[in-house]
Structures are given as C-alpha cells and as structure tokens.
Image (tube, rainbow, N blue to C red):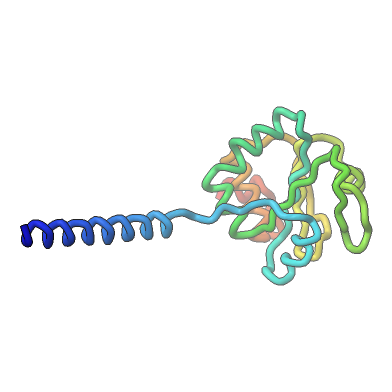
Length: 168
C-alpha cells in the first residue's frame, strides 16, 4: 500500500510538471496580435516606438469592411506587418465618438471627412508625427495588403514604385 501511494504521488507530480511545461510552450508560441488603439494614443506612441500609424476607416454596414476585419486583419502576414511597422487605429465614418488630432477635438466621422475620405474601407498611412503619407481605398486581399503594409512600413515607397517592389 505504501508503494502504491508513492507511485500515485510521483505520477501526480509528473502530470503536473508535464501540464505546466506544455502550457508554457503554448504560451511562448502564441504571438501577440496588434489591436487597434485610439488616435490620441497612437499619436503619442508612434514617435516613441518609431512606427507609422495605420488608420483603418470603415463603416459598420460595409460588407467589404467586415471582410477586411474578419479575414485580412486576421491573416498572419498582415498581423506581422502591422506589428513590425505600425500602430493601428480604426475610425468609424459614422461614429460620434470623440478623437483628438493635433489638439483638434472632433468626432470620428468628422475626422474621416477631414481626411477627405470618400469610400470605405480606406486605409491611410500616417508617419510617426501623424501626417498623411498616402491612402489606399477598397478591399485588398491579405497577400497584397501584407505586401503594401511592408512597402510603406519599410520606407521602400521612398525609393521605388509599388510595382517595382512587387517585382523584386
């Protein structure tokens, strides 16, 4: 009986060790995915982190916006490109939620109009100070979007066209 108790204790201890080590390895394999933050927060963090700001302008009712959020922004390559180069902000073209852009208070809808946004979805690329570098309207498949994010994020757009970048 005494041996049985020792074996039971040893097996229980072994199972706890194995369970703990497997949870640790799973936790180490999980990559933290970027989450959108407020415009104000992005404008503060961008200079500190030396990252650009990615502004995702969308509408709740827009099926292409929904696809961008459910498919494209969930793609591993897109997630990595955002993590590497950007701070992500989402702006709803119909929202009354207040944002602050360089000391100017306005709603998200007003900010979208200030960007001269004409369609959704539209992706805006801002430098770390918050100035607009460019924009890309419309739904973009994950592979192309990932490439575009890397092109702008790595400053390759300063040296070559996107077509040249794609060909290399």
